[in-house]
Structure formats: C-alpha cells, structure tokens
Length: 356
Image 1 (cartoon, one colour):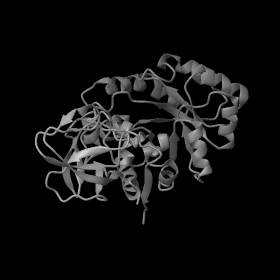
Image 2 (cartoon, one colour):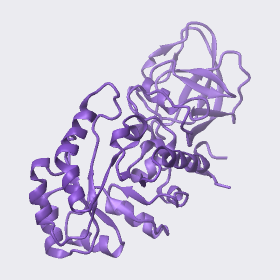
Image 3 (spheres, helix red, strand yellow):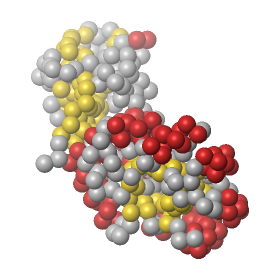
C-alpha cells in the first residue's frame, strides 16, 4: 500500500479538452503539456489528447520524452533551440520551434530551413519575443524559412480587472495581425484565461494549459464548475495519538494544544510536494470530513486535529482533489496551483484512472 499517491483521472482531462473545443469551434488547439503535463505525466496525458491539433512543451528535452514515449502528434517547443545541436535534434524529432530572438533567426538561417517556425511577438509580456515595431524586418530576415505561424502571450489574462489584455490586443490588431494575414500566416494567442474570459483573444489557434487539468487560471483562486479537476493528492494516516493540554506539535512548537486532544499523523510533507507555507487550520479531508492542520509541515509528515472522529492508521487523507479544490489549498499557502502541481516529488506514486 503506497503511503503517498497522486491519482490522475484521464477521463477528466479528455472532458476538459472537449470543453475547450466547444468554446472555440473551428479553431486549432495547441495543448500545453510542459513541465510533465503540469505534474500529471506528459506521456500518459499526451496519449489521451489525440484530438488536439498540436502539443506544446517548453524545452526540447520534454519533446524528446514524448517522442520516445510513442507520441507522434505535432509538438511545438515554446523556448525554441539554443544551438545547432538542438536544431539538428529538433529536425530529427520532427518538431515545430518558436523563434523569439535574433540569435535564433541567425541560427535557422545558417543551419537549416526545414523546421516549422512560430514567430513570437512580445506584445506586453516583456519576456521573450520580438518588439512589434521590428516585425517587418524580422519577417524579411526569415524569408525562405518554413513558417508555421505567429504567436504572442497574454501577461494579464488571469486578472479580469486588468486592462492589459485589451492593450495587448490593440497592439496586435494594429501592428501584427495585418502583416500576418498578408503573409498567409495563422495566429496563436489565447491561453486558458484568454479562452475563458477574453473572447477577442481567440484567433486561428488557441493554447490552453491549466484548464485542461480542471483548474481555474484566474487570480481569484476560485474553482470553476465548468472544469473537471483531474488530480487527487492523498496520503495515509500512519498514527493516531492523544496529546495533553499544553503540548506542542511539530517543529518550533508553533501550535500548542489548548486542551486534551487527538491528532492523526499523515505521511505527507514538503518532500512530497505539500506546501510548508500553508496556514495553520487549513483543511485536510479524512473520511470525507474536513479536519484542521496543526503544527508545522515537516519533510515527511503533517498532523491534523481529528477531535472524536473514528480515524485509524491506514485511513486515506485527501490533501487536495475530491471536495478540496487545489485552488483553495493554493490560496491558503499564498501561492498558485501551478506551483503545487509541478512540485509533486518523484517519491509520490502516480496512479491513473483510464479512459474507457
């Protein structure tokens, strides 16, 4: 019996992908499965995404893992390549590459013109991409290359109160979309938040990530009923103890009992990916009941106040998932769901619920 597990419901991922398709009928989907599919297992997830038009990863190593795993869907590497060796490998793996810098333009012009390229525009993210005013020159420098399309990235779409998305769209509509159309190139823009709340960001291609895994991309950290969460993080109770009034619990004694009490000790800690920063009193589910965390999260263990509940060693505790949204856990930890998803460690066993 595995003490700490992550259970991935692949049916939910398939359902979320169908929902994505319904929100953008007729558009092409580039499903983002970087960072091991946000901690869900990239190869296993890719195998149930046959209906996606392409997959996106951050780095060529991630693309290599997918190809080795038998995935033949078109794959786009969002960071592109750094040198001629990576470019050669990208060609061998039949990848698409983002080009976001002059260095990469020079690299492609010198060492090859067969790999499909996505030209990246910095419309306001301020991270990677060409400035809009330089786009005509960049198009000329890429003349003769195998262009797949043009893309940009939304920096504030997760904040529905911000006007930054509208300003990014204005830049693209005024300076980029017309040039792309002149060259017969498709555009790739909407991320999960754009797809859900900013209809005008839906262009030829959409690029959903977090919503594929049933999690809200928005800054309010509220779960959404229209998405099906696909991950349950759980661990086993390994001890039930009685404590006397005035005893401390865990490192640093940040929690002291106000009266005699019973605690369950659960085999999960920050070495598994449970956040050390989470607030005291945060809920853990045991036998479908919420029970408050007491004491500091340690490397391997957490403790919860179980009151008079009939809890026994071997019982399963849900850390997030069923009736305990990861968005809520993230808010209590003053972080974001992305951090929690990608922080699950290698010692946690992955189980998969298969698509029928």
